[in-house]
Image (cartoon, rainbow, N blue to C red; front, side, top):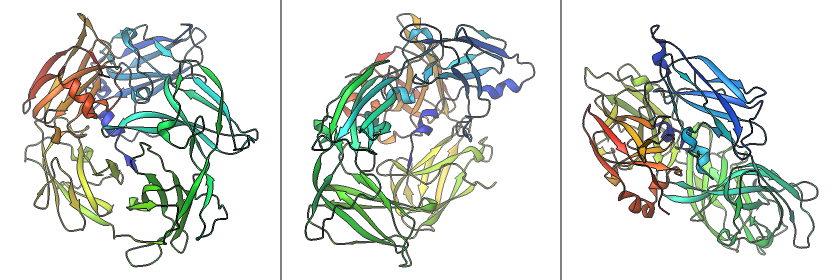
Length: 556
C-alpha cells in the first residue's frame, strides 16, 4: 500500500537548486549556526546536523542517506556547526539527537509546527546565494515527551508482550484519521515506556494481537470472548478514549490500561488466483471501515493451500485487503457478526499491463525520463511503485501488474522544468481530472504534456516584515481539478520568499498558512472559512505571477 503523501510534499518546491552551482563562475557559500534547547536555550553538543538540498529533481532515488548532495556534520562542544564550500541553492537544515524530537531550522523565531504537522514540516528553507555567508542559522530542538504506564487484565494482573501505541490525528484525503506514531512493548510487569513523543494531543491504544490472532477455544457453534483493541483508560470505542496532552520534555506516568474483552468471531477464507490455483504468500489485512483509524485491526497471510484465518475479530464492517508481490492487490467488503460466518472464497482477477504514451509537441523541452505516473484508487491509496518507470525515446511507457479497478491518473513532473499534463485520455475517456475504470489490457493511456507551465512566486509579509517558514499553498479554484499535480506547496525561505513552478494554467487560490497541518485545507468546513482569506491568481501559459501574501492561521 503506497500513500501518495511524500510526492505531494515536494511538488512545487522547485526553485533553482544546487545543480546551478556546477557553473565554475559561481562561488560557493558557507552556512554556520548553533543547535539549542528550545526550553532552556542552552546549546546542544554532539547533535547530528543534516543539510539537504531542495532542487528540481523532486523524485531522485533518496536512499538511506538522503538525496544526492546531502551533507552531515556534528555540533561541537559549544553547539556550533559549520558547512563550508556549499553550492548555491535552496536547502533544508535539521538536527537529531537522542532525547529530542527532530529539529528544523526556523528563521525569525517562528515555530516549526506542532503535533502531527511536525512530521511533515520542512521548517524554513534556506536560500544560499553564490559566495554568501549565512551566519547564526539556529536550530532549536524540542525535548522529547515520554509516557509510561502498564497494562493489566480484568483482575489487575500484568500482561506481557503487548503493543502499546500513541495515536495522533492527522488530515488524510479531507478527513481526520488517527494514525499510530510511536509504540512500545509491555515487559514482564506489564509496563510500557513510549519515548520520542512530539508535543500535541495523543491517545493510547493497546493491541492484543496483530498477526492472525490467538485461538480462544471457541467453536463454530459457540463464539467466544477475547481481548480486543483497548484505549486508555480501558474502553473499546475510540470516541470514549481519553486525550493526553504531551508538552515538550514532559514525563507523564501512571497510565494504567485495563485490557477489555468482547465477543469476537473469525474470518476464514481461501484465495484463488486467476487460474483457480491457491494464491499463497499473500498479505491479508483487515481495515475497519469508517472508524477513523488508519491501521490494520488484524493481519495475517495465505498458506500454501491459499487459506487464511483472522481470529478475535469484533463485530463490525471491514475491508479485507490482499497484497502480494508485484503490487497485485484486492479489496473485499466484509461484515462480521458474533455468529460464525461461512468461509470466504476470493478469486483474484488477473493483473495486467497498462501501455501508455507521453505525447508532446515536436519542439517541447521536457525530459520524459523524469516524469512519473501513479494510479490512485478511490480511497486515495496508490497502486504499485512510482519510480522505476521505463520510458522509451518515443515516449511510450508501461505500468505492470495493475489490478483491475477504478483509478485516478496522477502525473508528477517535478524534474520536468516548465512541464505539466495538459490532458489525459484513457481510450475514449477523459481522465484529466476524474477517475476511470481500468479493468483490462489493451486500452491505451495517453498523457499530453505541455512545456509552457506557469510560475507563481513572491513573498509572505507579516506586519511589514518578511515571514519566513510559513507554508504557501496554491489550490486550483475548481474543486474537481484539485489533485496532487495541481496543488503546489512550498515553505518560504529565510527572506519570506517562495517560488512555485510547473503550474498548470488556470485560476487558483493562494494562501500563506501559519503552523499549518498538512492537508488541513482538504477539510470542507476548514476550506469554507479559509477561502475568504484567499488571494486569487490566474496563471497563464508560460506566465509568471508575483504575489504578496499575508500569513493567516488555519481556522478552527
